[in-house]
Image 1 (cartoon, rainbow, N blue to C red):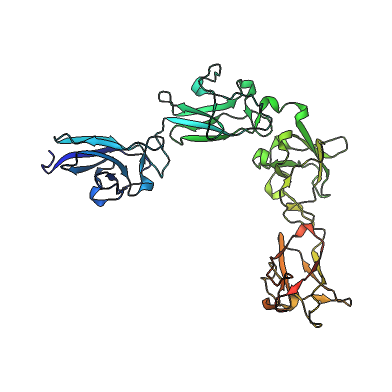
Image 2: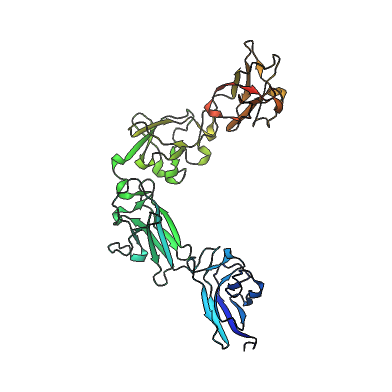
Length: 429
């Protein structure tokens, strides 16, 4: 029996499975000015799955929601969407009202019975009048009907489809098509892909990027040829070279992207036209054998760009990470011009990321030649070179012509064999 002082008991008999253990649950509504963490309205716990609160007499009609202590943790519906306020009316008799909480605003919904699939990206060669349909286990891979046709969303301006769980189906496997299984989505090389899969309850929205269409990537006129006209002399004779990049998720040993040899003995690979503009590198099958620059240092990702209207791209490979033979171990930096008010007996120093930015160490002092020019030869190391010129201290570092600090001079080691520069002004002069 309820106590005579309390006439209505609200029970929560089910919580979302991802509710934090021993989380405090609160009821909030128009009876407590919608305070989401009011200790007077914290539910009591009888067990892990049963919580309750006895509401006082006179509460009458009420609107309310449940929280875990603040509005960022307010309850949501089973798909994580905003829900209307709950409402109750005290009838005057002792009552026990049982309820369930389906999800929390700060946690992924786990009991959603619907999934919305959004086509967030489509290949450039997708026909303008294309109609997109889903084929999968949810429709026995039969796309003759209209039920699983994507429609253009007015807000997102993207094709989308909402699927409701049929019966007790736990997951769907599917592909995106243009109305026929012969016109299904493909990977970046136009190859057939495995069916996609998503479980109901994992998420309420799935954004899908279609990389290519099987039927539109097979035509020869939609291919380009990448030719490697030069490779390192120490490349093992019988080892394969692979193209690796965005179009195959940077997998370094993709047999479909193994380079072949043409009649001239040059390595080449055919790529889909849509590969233009993507980033890539070459390997000999793993990242330990990735290409390097001519000095044996890491290079930036290449970008596949064609010249004019040609469908042939020609490049060279300079070095391999595991077989690196640098072409030169040192870099010479010249100061060919400097301010007129530079003292005649001035000594110049280089400070950078290779010497802990020390502004005046003797072993990083420039040599001076008869013409008044300064030079220093330093060993190549690392990947990027950053430095400034000083006269021995940070008070006498180089600045711009207005006396303002300048950014560090920055070079990629592999891009330069010698640097000639001008100092515009000294900070102390």
